[in-house]
Structures are given as C-alpha cells and as structure tokens.
Length: 412
Image (cartoon, rainbow, N blue to C red; front, side, top):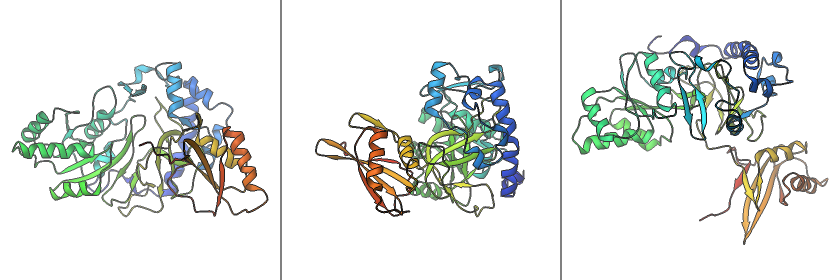
C-alpha cells in the first residue's frame, strides 16, 4: 500500500480487470448452485459455464430485493441463499423488512477499507463512527474497513450527541464516518458548548445527500469529505476519489445498469437500475437488483483509477404505480416494448383528469404510420388491463432519468 493508491488493482488495465472478474465468475456460480438450494433453483437450466462476459451475464435472471424478502419469509432466515453453514458467519443482521444478512468471514468483508483510503484515512487515524451498530450492518461496514486499514475506531453509533462531542474533545479523532448532516450536528453542538472539535480533518459519509453547500461548509472548517455508495447486502459498491467526478466502482464487484423492471443492460450514460454481482462465497448475490438508480459515467477518472465510474445514487427504480386501482409495473412496460420492434424505449406518464386517472405511454421510435399507435395501445390494454393514450416521440427525446413510470398526479 502506497500513499497514493490502496493497491495496484486500482490502476489495473480495464480489459485485464474485466477478464479477471469473468474468469472467476463461473467458479462462483458453480459454488452457489452446489451449496444453495435457492441459487440452484434460481439459476436452473441456464448455461452457467458460458458466463464469461457481460452479454452472457445479462442472460441470467435478476434477483430483486423484493423477491429475496419473499423467499426469506417463506424459508427463514436466508431464503435458502446461504451457500454454506451459518457457523461461517461472524455476525447475523436484521435490516428493515426484515431482511436477514450474514457477515462473511474476513477482516474487511464489506470492502470498506479502499473507500476510506480514497477519502484520506490512513493507518493510525482515530475514527469516530456515527453509523448505527444496532441490528443492521451499517456501523460495522466501515468499522471493519477502518480496522483493516490500521485505524482505531470509536463506535459512537447514532444519537447521544452531547456525549459524542465530549468524546471528540477528549479522544481527538482525526476522522468521521456517518451520514452527511450528522457531522454538522456534532460540529455545531461543539461550538454551542465551547468544546474543541478541531481534530476532525477528514470524513467519509453515506446514507444521504452531501449537498455542495454542505461540503463547502466542511471544507471551510478544514475538513475534506468524501462519499461512498454502500448497501447492507453488498457492502461498499463505489466510492468517491479526490477527483470528485462520480464514484469509482470498488474492486471485486461486477456492476451493471439495467432498464428498470428488466435485466436488459443499457448504454453507458443512460440512467437505469443498479445490478451487482459480488464474490461473497458464503452469501453470493448474483445479478442482485438494488432498486437504486444510477448511470455509468464514460471514461476514466482523472485520479488515475481505472474501474468504471457511477454517478452515485439517483433515486429509486421501484416505480410500481397504482392506476384506477390496478398496479402497473415497469416490467409490463418492458413487455410492451418487446412486443413492438419499432419501439426503442417507452415511458408511462400517469396523470389526473378531474377525478379520473389517466395514462399516456410515450414511445421512442422512427416509425410513423402503419397503425403503430393503435397496435401499441392494444398491447398496453392487454398487458395492463387499462386504457391509455400513445404518444410517438423521436429517438432520444425521452428524459434520461431512469423513469419507466412517472407518476405526475398531485397528492397535496
């Protein structure tokens, strides 16, 4: 580990990284189906040995978090997706849902150390961790990463602000991890109580938006703040670097952006749902749909790291919407698009006319005439059992925001 990179993989040739990831993927798939009844069922009758590239990976079924929740309820605690014995787990967590998550073995099972390093943390730093340690893995994700990096952690958790401010003055932590706004709460409380909080010089935040004005406020106080994107299921998926241009994908993850409601990969730069494959042999997650929206930023980060970059969290992909008492799902819109080769993309706008719900399906197409609008309207009615208007728009004219269903009704 040098002072400018966590390890040499951060500067690995992009094609070489891709080859390395997909070279070890077939072994993970084989392990998953041999040791997990749920994965054996989920991946049944698919040619797993041929999954050595992204196009082949895209043919595997996506596992959605809602599906995992249902499987866990039917077969608790892990829905049959644990690929091994529970004795191999260091801890077990219960996130809202509830969703059960085992902690894999190893010093840094959620891959948090690399993101901390990119945020300026180094061996010997004292880190105040204000993420929750209660029930969920939130606090442990970066706790374990900091320990792996050689830092000393003060497990502050959530709340008890006055005690945390007192601890900052006495312990003098050099770094903070927690939500973006809670650091301000601590600093403001310290000023109110005339306590010295000036030891904090760096921070890594997650779980909320770090607005530019807040980042600048921290910078004005001599605190450099980076962000990471992490989930309880997968750990730290991507992290911000000193370039401050998107988030670099962490090593040992395969990240895809797909059209919401489908497993279809979209082009770089197009907003879609984040789908992730990890290499956790105890609890493998293969094409796991996070439900979060993001997009791939083309090109390499100016910081020199070569992995793909994400734009960060851009909203939720679960756009299932009730119209006239019936649920309409993004998967149904994908079904409609698939039924008409002339259609490249579609977006359903749900509105209100008086006391009635309305639907307008905008479709990107170069085709005109030939009864396309009428045929798509029929398919829309057949698939959703609801009537809607059809609007033809030129290719590239729909908003690039990841929305397949836009609920434009006013609820105020």
